[in-house]
Image (cartoon, rainbow, N blue to C red):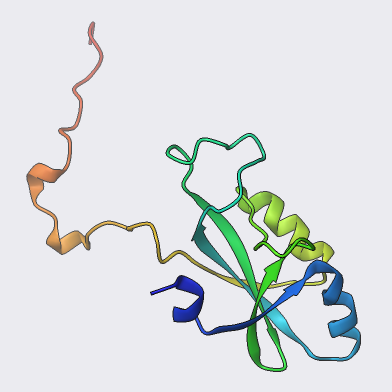
Length: 127
């Protein structure tokens, strides 16, 4: 199933729409930053095998979920949360949710076996 369908995305807007929607009080107060499989090559991260993921933005317009697209119609993507945070603040968002449904987080502590952890290294030679 397509990730945007699973998240309930029902429309797309561009960066140019944000100020207009905010002035009409149709834009929600917060955004959702979420992990996506990269579609765009660029920004020095052209090796899809080494950098398969990017960050995308969802906003709420009239209480419906909208994905942020570029003026050319493709979904906007960021490789750095630092740059994305700066962009969000420039657009007037002061808080947002972050979700990552694509990369595994690991097993809960109680489900890990002792041999899953590397041994603690001994002291350096000469001690």
